[in-house]
Image (cartoon, rainbow, N blue to C red; front, side):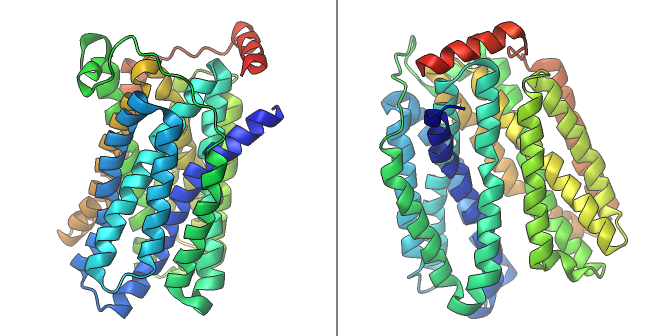
Length: 401
């Protein structure tokens, strides 16, 4: 890639990096909050849900604003909101203020990702667009690795407030970088609005992509937040160790990179189907693991396929909407997906509380993923066909970017 493309990938990729750092750090500090403020399970659940609700609103509103006032401006605003929220979080005196700040921070986080994906989609075409979107999403794994290092290396020494401060200062560093991002001028043929998404020419893709995001996010958060706890109850505390966390994060990177490579060889739909099927097999193997080595291997494959599927869906979604409503379409689909992300952990907890077996819960995940694969195969139109002509087009677009 040219130097300018490396720069764009790095600066926009920080959106996924900061999102992952925030989610990971919150998961690591929640046990500390429970002890410090003597939180009940309901209060602790509300802490986690506050961010998700904020992200639902952020994705919906900021995607629309990106079509109205420009991608770059909204991307800077969401980052400023997110960083100021984390700075305020270090001073939270009680759980009520903490929850309020997390809600506001979630608006910035939820708005950042669909707008970042839209900006990249505007800047590239064809196979090159798909690969850049997957590579940008791979920064999620890097953010999780950095958060793990902070949580296991620094947090026991300096406490959770100083650790959050470090992440906030890191985010502030990216603000001046984003001021130099390209901003594709939006000259809409139609005025962007949510109603446009439900007109006959866009309704099917809006429904299908929203359903896919709902399924992918629900199963991801349901599995990654609950399967570790289930295995701990079965006598495998290794999954709470630094080595396990680092391995699961590192396993995500080749999943992203292979998906990016396959984008030049196969249709986007085909790549996503491969990763969804791999996720189904991996979660079953992970749940049935009976030794530490089996947990590590199957868990690594689960990270490989599940996050690769997420990256491939990121690559697929923006191209389904014309540029004039691309931000609105991407934001709406991810906002509905965030509803799934909020429901997933509560649904699993409820089923376990109602004495449903683990196999039943996992069976639900499998059914949802199979249903998502069928929706993808039958309904979603994939206009990206790897070919020599597409490669030639990408090469020409590189000289004009």
